[in-house]
Image (tube, rainbow, N blue to C red; front, side, top):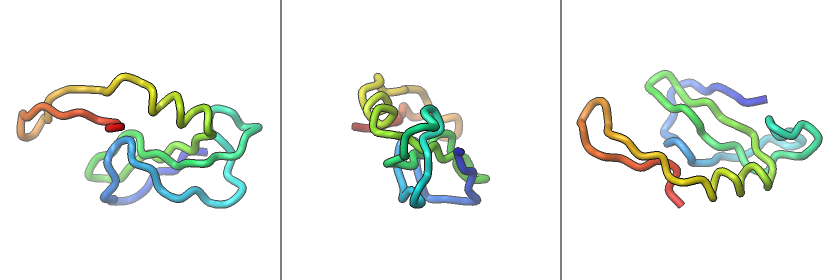
Length: 80
C-alpha cells in the first residue's frame, strides 16, 4: 500500500528505498522494486510502491509540464 510521509525533500518522480516484502500497489501479486514519490507538498509526499512493469511505465510516460503556482516559472516533473 502507498505510504504518506511527513515533511520530505523528495520531488515528484524520485524514488526511495522499499521495505522488504512490499507488494506493488497496482499488481498485488508482485514484489515492489521502487517506492516513487507522487504528489508532494509542504505536508509530505505520497509514495507509491511499484513493480518493474510500473516503474517502466512511469519512466516511459511523457513528462508532465506546467507552471509553478508560487514563482510562475515553467517546470517539468518526472525527469528521465
